[in-house]
Length: 378
Image (cartoon, rainbow, N blue to C red):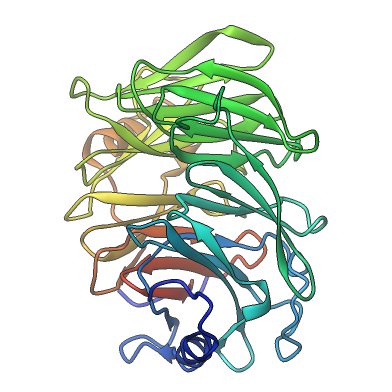
């Protein structure tokens, strides 16, 4: 792979919306230090980010951008009720971002996560905040299709920390919440399939491994795997070496389902696990100089993973062949104990909050920091 070198949401004021749109349209810039990094400025801080999984998953009204161009949904992070989701495309010929205002919309509270439907059709986008919401992205507009929450009454609904869309069974979305539960939704029926008390404390992330198998991480410091065929039991595959240190992020390798990665609160390490041998990590990636905030496996290769953190760096790692094979060789043990060096280092210059690796465009990794989104050609 080619490598990189080592506003508040719009309201009813049309003039303000037009000014905001013009600012966004003129905000693409190439990094002066790196010709493979392209920056998009927004009028507000950004956190949630999602790549469209297919070139045709968004029926864009922006005819100036080729259908095969990468498209992203970007969620604002404004600490108030009114927030926003913007849909933008990246024109690979012009090397410029193209916002699509027809498909952008206001959002209640900052979305903690965004995901497109795993298949090109239907053109759906899911978001999580106080509830799980499904949005239909048509050629001319974005429309709210459904609001899914598990509150038993009209009262308090526990905030959702994350969710994952099942790519093998797309009718299923699993959500995680601060109320210690994971909820599996049948989004075709807009109904709860099952709800589990997954951990002893807040659940911070969830990831599908198979059609009926998911894992979650929690403030109780554990990674647990659940099989929907046996809802009464779970398997703990990892526990934080520091008691009660929360695990914040979880990524399940889509190419080789034996591997997952997790991160701890206030830790510079990425812990790589082989679920066939859960006693100890197969690798600990520890070259970040500050806390790791986001991780993503390469969509096309089983041994590559990207991480980003408060040190402003995005690192791509290649796991040792012995570790990726799940062996207990000396090389695998050394990798687990001493860590390995990244094969790619990119410095953003600010704390990176979010990271995504495009499944449809393997050459592009997206990172978010402050009010900026950068696409990195890797």
